[in-house]
Image 1 (cartoon, rainbow, N blue to C red):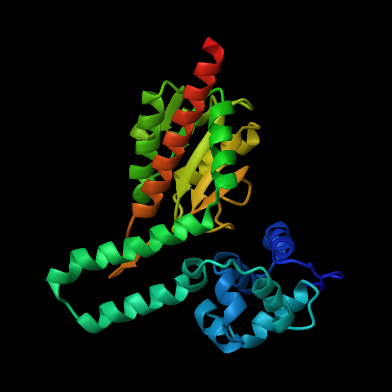
Image 2 (cartoon, helix red, strand yellow):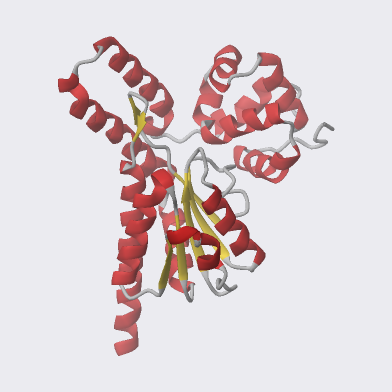
Length: 286
């Protein structure tokens, strides 16, 4: 891998460079790239040894990753993220708070009476992080995509199915022309064949990503439609070619992953669209 001649000067520039070059990186460097994109505050604050342990690679691989993008070493890359850190304590400490939470659960053992409290605490952490990770501009852009689309196609299977079905039902209730790609009788491909460049596909998927959702995204891209992705990583298969990505990091309690943050985000999108539509209706009546 040739080294990048001019290293990005800001964390945002580095993020853009990683997204642009992600497919050309080796599998090991892709592993580091995903960690850098998904946990930038940890990259800013932790030592090289800790970053290597948490991303599952050797420290030398992180140094090689930094050099691939033109930096003399990992510390110069980390400095970009330190310079761009958010001031919010929730965002800064999210990764560490999640680890502390999981360690506390492990010490409690198998106390069934604590399960509800554990899920509440884990979901509170995830919701606080969601509020820091997705800003007003991100939400406004997503609502704009929904409002401008002639027809919405909504897809999400397996764990994402409750989120996608809620979005499809709620947006239909608001009068938005919506096609729910539910894959009944194995017809998910046929349900997306009519998508056009005037339409929007809302795709929801988390690791491991469903083949049906990936297929729907590919069809939408091939037909020139826009894609709004809700996913757990900026470099997930549904995110890389999307028009916009809303990243959701869900709570995981005793190996069970929640959907609280995703449902909260879905509700915010629906209500945001409702406000947008009602405002347009009032302006037309004047």
